[in-house]
Image 1: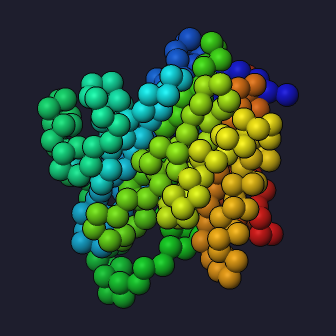
Image 2: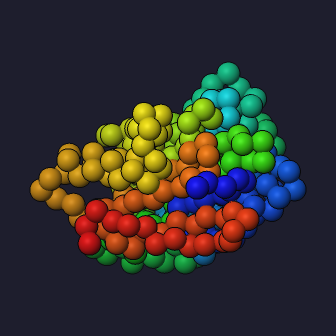
Length: 290
Ligand code: SD4
């Protein structure tokens, strides 16, 4: 049986779910909970796949993607934005202060400055060194659960029973300049329908975009599947398109209106955090390949 309020996120980001829980406990809404929750990871310099300290593209530029969605289906996103440490906050401003849903690149950055965000150098010394090292071979090969594994997607239900979600990433390390993955794409990296539930993704974004993964999972829940069953079906759709080669990771998490949760992935190693009255848990996800 489900339980509310609840915060859930991809990977073992206990500090992020703790922050979201704090917001929910004070009676805060799900939108503020996911916004403040994922910001913890954007601000964590040791997380090399989100926000400040994220790995750069192959030209050495850190470009960030994020999106946010509320209980009324309002949403905002920024794509491939540079020099701003909290893309999720800019995505929320796009949602609340503009007639648009997505702003990309220079336009997103310009909008952020107009909204009072400060220019920040996002390439840390450590990231720079790792990039210099990578340039020696320049091999583009994400390593399952080791590299590129820290994108945070978060879903929450507040005490009113309303759902919101957020997703933020620096994308795949050493991606081509201008590459955008699933994380800032509504329906792919994140989707919320307050009548049904929400879903969010991590892993190789191209595969999630191809199947519009998060929207698919929410629609499957609408048709009666549990969050767990819906995540499993979402992964199987991706497998069906990649019968010969499954050397990449995808992880989905989902929540329904009752507060039931689920998670599923391709390769063992994906985990997701849940925070409810019953505890703060890092859940090992079941996987398609064993
Ligand atoms: C992307 N989905 O840009 C992101 C990467 C990711 O954990 O999830 N990393 O494709």
